[in-house]
Image 1 (spheres, helix red, strand yellow):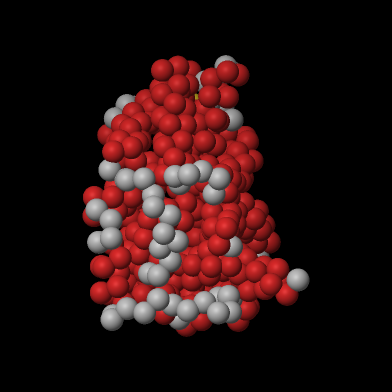
Image 2 (image 1 turned 120 degrees about the vertical axis):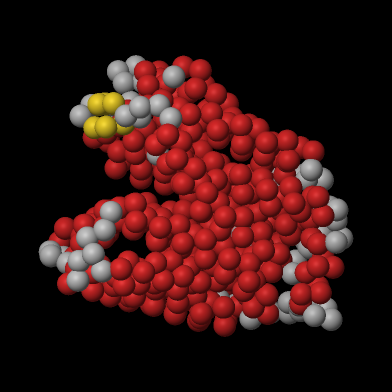
Length: 431
């Protein structure tokens, strides 16, 4: 009974506390317009704060993966402090911008606080519990990491209605007050997770001459092309997911479901979380975990091709079947996007073992950093420069542009499928 309790108390619960806190970074769309209005800048200018947050998430994970490998208590403490500090700093610069409209200092301060400082907390907080969970759940590593990463995905569904309520109930300046409150709440949650997070008793880290040398030596145990394939297909899956998810709200409006956009967003967030848990748990039962990626890419390709062939976005309004196709695409992409995240650490551990998994996982998360800069921006560029904006149910939308986004993502998904099939060699299950 003691071991069972430790498995959940020392592994799963702190992982959920950490990931359910940092996962709220995806609530950005809830308050981005309010921030822009309050400080006197365009929404486009403010949006870069989110892109910077994702970029520095991936880069801090890449550069601090060695620290996580060496000391999860130090890394989880750094995550707790920097995430809360970044949130509080964001609130301060929003307040400053409200008193000094159009202040460049306010905008830059938000970039630094939400993007850089909070980004460090995101990267270290994301990595810290993953290896610990895989050590506690050796026979079900996918289920364990899926559980934690599902917390990251579910955070949006849980926090979005709460944040929306806070924005309206806190009155004037509610957006900066909300950040102060959340900074305190999430610091407490993450600090508790930091205190109780622990590796199993008796686990001894493999000894290497130096940690950097250990990472390089570990990667060389398999053809480097295999790792490049993993990195690229992870990058493509995130890029395509962000491209479609960033246009989700307008696609829903095009098919006449604008009144249900909030509900659909919550359901898609649940599919995101469910994909993280479901695909990773399923992969535990497969001989080769890479098979899950082939399934994710196949489902994504099929669903996008169906919407493309039926022109579901342009012709979906009033057509129940086409609406089902469009909603299926949104939910499948969200599930595959989440499943891609949860299977990466276990895929890497099967290939390279557990010795340097946090550091290797951190380096691989640099793909997330670059996808965070390219996914949304790629979709925005396509929508802005192709097709035409027309009146759709009272809003200006570009159905042709959204369809063109799907054409590009279909091609990219096909490239990822080729990488999965031909570049990533079958796993040796070294973990």
